[in-house]
Image (cartoon, rainbow, N blue to C red; front, top):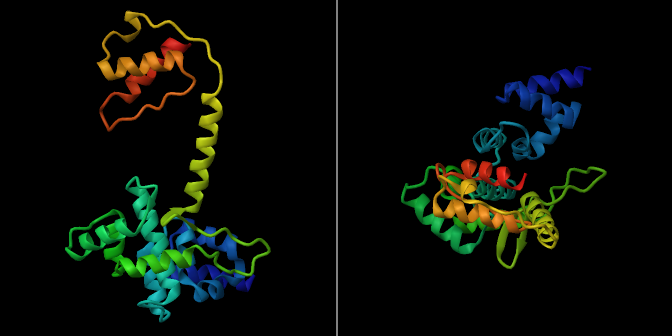
Amino acid sequence: TPAYRAARAYLCRIGLGPAAVDAGLRRWGGDTEAIVAADPYILMDLPRVGWTIADGVASRLGITGADPRRLRAAGVYALRSAAQDGHCWIDEAALADAGRGAQAGLASRGLAGAMAAAGLGPADIAQGLDLACVPRDLDDDEAPRAPVTCDAGRYYLTDLLVAECDVAADLRRIAGATVAAVEVTDADVAGLDPDQDRAVRAAAIGAVVVLTGGPGTGKTHTSRAILAVVR
């Protein structure tokens, strides 16, 4: 339809790649331009569309500074950036610390990097996070879930929090199961260091074992040893 073609042309014109264009058209159809004009930061929900593109579109539409839509998006962007650095949540102290890093020009990634990219301070990001705890109103039949959840002063990405709670519930269920212990021989742990040896022996007698470690510490090697024993 003409509206659909116009929407495709609009998304291409504002700099979106093929995957994002197709995703946007599937989601918004011929109403794409009107929806994006109302809140350009909704573009960040599309594949490979980050803060820079969305904020550039917003700026051309006159959405700048402390506009609530910009603050809300910046809050979500900052929280996502923190999550990519391994943080499950952020709080006022984390924001203050990141703000000092951003102000000193020491930030290139994570929470501080996001704050520097947005040019916003801790108070602005906190305000944006509070705004993000309220679902965006898109006049949809199904009310969208708020992207951020605040609990006891800690801000979480809602989807990650729900996933963590589901994993925790599964771990509790599995941990309560009765399992038959498996004998571990010296040959089974030959060549393993003491920590890896303990991990294999723990897996042989317990229903749940959490194996952690940085790159190159032997997690894969230890996992193979565990699988060889429990099989």
